[in-house]
Amino acid sequence: MVRLEGVGLGYAGTPVLQGVSFGIAEGGFRWLLGPSGAGKTSLLRLLHLAVRPSAGRLELMGQDIGAARRARLPLLRRRIGMVFQDFRLLPHLSAFDNVALPLRLAGRPEGQVRVDTLELLGWVGLSRKLLSRPAEMSGGEQQRVAIARAVVARPLLLLADEPTGNLDEVQAGRLMQLLHELNRLGTTVVVATHNDALVARHPAHTLRLLDGHLVRDD
Amino acid sequence: MTRARAASRTLRPAGSDDLGLRRALSDRLLPLLVGAMAFLAALALAGAFAAAALARHWQDGAAAVLIVQVPQPDSPAADGAGPRVGRVLAALRGLDGIGAARVLPDQELAELLRPWLGAGPGAVALQLPAVIEVRLTGMPPADLGGRLRAAAPGTLVEAQDQWVGRLSVLARSLQACAALAIGIVGFVAVAVVAVATRAGLASRRDAIEIVHGLGATRGYIAGRFARRATMLAAVGGALGAAAAVPVLVGLAGLAQPFTGRDVPPDLADTLPGALWLALPALPLAAAAIGWATAQGTVRRWLRRLP
Image 1 (cartoon, chains in turn brown, purple):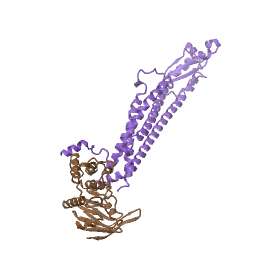
Image 2: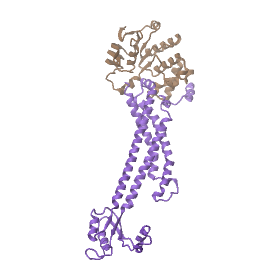
Image 3: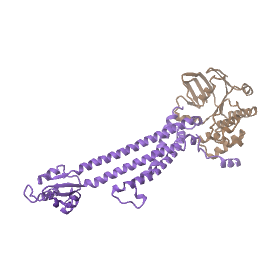
């Protein structure tokens, strides 16, 4: 599903990732750990196809991303779900429309869009906030909308950057339950976190970054 | 399902404004600017049609007539065979491009000269030349004057074709200026839409990056901008064209005494038919400019994203 061979990434000549190599089989689960500035978010951006690698080879879902045509990338992105640390919700859209967006971009029938979106918003406890805009919701509610948006299209690869940062213990537990359920159904999951307690409660394969280098893969 | 039905009554239509372009591309400034461009384009179009009509008028009227003056018309011709005016008439009738030729009767000539000579040429004992009005059916021979002078020395051919030609060049120049003005107006309209689109891209950068990350294609994002720009430009074009109509009708009324036409009974006849067809085309042209410019601008901007 995911394969990196000597991948490097730099912004304006400054390297943020260097010589990163690892692989994740389909249906795998990885915690992505490391201190702030270690390169976790940059690695997630690479895996989300928000940037292309400056060096090395990145392969996602059997596609060599460095060699793939630009027109091919949107179709790959639709199969990747991403939960951003800062949510990245569209402020002018309601919770419903934010969550429905990936389905609409994929051209799903509107009837299916409504059913799937309502079901997921109900699951994250936001049935009463369908028409609320992000500015009208708390941080935790916005994070739940972001999570619902990331998983509504049933992605093959799910990436999450500090997904429990604004959730209480109960909601964090429900989120982990959802991630494990998706993982059990075959979704490959990569979760970046600082939450050691969460990692201890849900032990799994770990990737650890330090200063842009992968220092642990076990 | 009940919840889905309830939601469908309150949720907005799919994809109505995913990128929030209602605010990013204002429905005030862009239509206003495009409307001003359409107004100017309508004036330039009217100028082009007026110049074309003038050119036709001059060519159909004055250019089709040639005036020949024969001094001492009743004197014998050079070869002695009849009066000079008769020889010139005979020479004209055999030439290419000459339709009809008639000698203006003395009474008509006297009437034409009354403003200058008062009671008539007889009163001041002037011997006037004969004036022959020649209707042309095509281009007369280049050496027409020489041939006529050979028949009756001193004969003058008034070279109306020369000044008509100059007026035609003037009319064509006016048409070219009008076309240039339309081109400049079109260029400014493109620039206005491009600047507005770039401003919209800058203000919606985050939203674009988000939908791009969710799998939106370049065509989808460019299409959203193009749809909005097309609608705003079409509205502006329609407003500009509509605002130009009363101005053009007023100008046509002012020009009425110079055209020799009677005042038309209804509004539809006030302006040329071609102009009535061109005015509704302005909103269509504005819409096309809006669509193409927004598509090009957004697709070029999106190259910065992977």
